[in-house]
Structures are given as C-alpha cells and as structure tokens.
Image 1: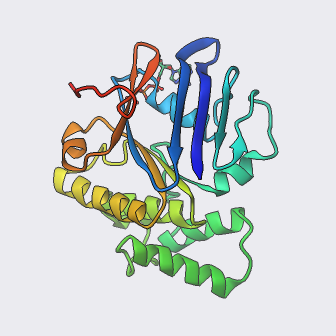
Image 2: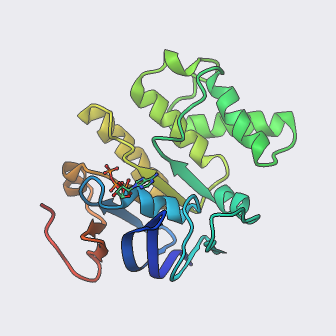
Image 3: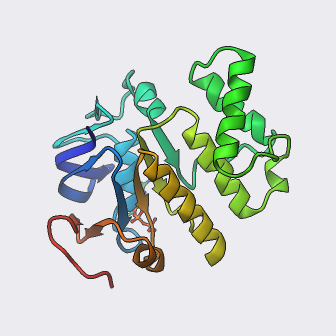
Length: 230
Ligand SMILES: Nc1ncnc2c1ncn2[C@@H]1O[C@H](COP(=O)(O)OP(=O)(O)OP(=O)(O)O)[C@@H](O)[C@H]1O
C-alpha cells in the first residue's frame, strides 16, 4: 500500500511557489528523511501532506485521501488527520492540563467513546513511548525529551499509517535525540511509515534511510538520483 503519492505537485505559500513538480511515493512501512536548507520548503511540503496548505496544481493522495485543491474547508480533512500522526513544532502540548488529559483531548476530538477504553488507550501509548508513570503530571514537570515522547504518544493514539515529523529532535541534546530517534525506528519497525524533516545529518548517517531533499524549488529523491549530503 502507498501512503503518500504526489504527482507533479506544486507546493505553494499563498501565490509563491515553494516547490514545483514534486513527484514521489512513500510505501507502507517505509522511512524517509526530508532535508534542505532553512526556507527550502520542508515544512511547506509536510503541511501540504496533512492538508494545512492546498495543492493547487498536480495531484496527491495521503493514506488514501485525495489532497484538496483549495484551502476552503474540505470535510474529509478530519478523516485524513485521524489516519496520520503529526509531530510538529506548532502542535505542542496543552500546558494547562495533565499528560493524560492532553491525550484524552485528542481521543474525544476524534470520536472515541467509553471512559475505560480511553483510559486503556492512554496507558498503552504512554507505555509504548516509555513513559508509563507520567500520566498525572503536568507538561511543565517533564523534561524536553519527555515532552517530545508525550507528543509522539499523542500522535500514536489512532494507530496512524504514517507519521509526519518536523524536526522532532531540533531542540534536544544529542543523547536525548538519539533515544527519540530509536523510538521512531521502533515505531517504524512495527509498520508505520515515517517522513521526518531534519537538519541533523549525524542522525541520518547513524540511521541510514532514503532521503528527500528540497533544493532550488525541486525535490530530489535519493531513491531515484543518489546524492551526497553536504
Ligand atoms: N505562513 C507563510 N506565509 C508565507 N510564506 C511562508 C509561510 N511559511 C513559510 N513561507 C515561505 O515558504 C518558503 C519555505 O518555507 P518552509 O518553512 O517550508 O521551509 P523549511 O525548509 O521548512 O525551513 P526550516 O528548515 O527553517 O523550517 C520560505 O520562502 C518561507 O519564507
């Protein structure tokens, strides 16, 4: 199964073209990095993939949903988002409630019913990210690495086919970054596809996978044209 399919897609910020003629596919269970200089279009591409930006030209589908051509409301977007895990700088935790309540908020927003079922799912995802004992804590009582694990747990709640991550290790120490990366590898090994934007080439060397690079308005794919990271 293909989880991302773009064909001659144009990634636009308002009237400005950020990337043109983007064509690539990501299969179920694949892992790919997204690299490129600051401002080269990584976040814009990811936003297009979760339908935060429209796809004005070309075609695209993500986890089986056609990406909308216009920014105006597309009633399928909530269904698309339910099949995706999004780990983004601007999708941070709610600091006015506990870890469990942060997760509960997402379960309620995505239609989960039954108190016991919801509690069980919250325990499962926290266990999965190695944070079984923090459910009752407030986000500010956690370290940066722990907060990022909670963000990952939140992204896993609805068993996504695809995780989209934008610089998930951006603000973390090297050894904390490494443990977060190991968690992504584990999640990927269990069958979830991952597309991760990063500036951290050391991480890429250590955990080699396919690399997609935004450069001069185009997307270069290491699976099609091998290139050296520099
Ligand atoms: N909200 C916005 N409105 C208009 N233009 C934007 C907006 N966000 C980004 N851009 C522009 O789109 C281009 C691509 O930015 P984008 O954030 O996708 O790059 P990036 O590769 O993710 O950069 P970084 O590594 O710094 O996160 C840049 O020229 C940027 O100025």
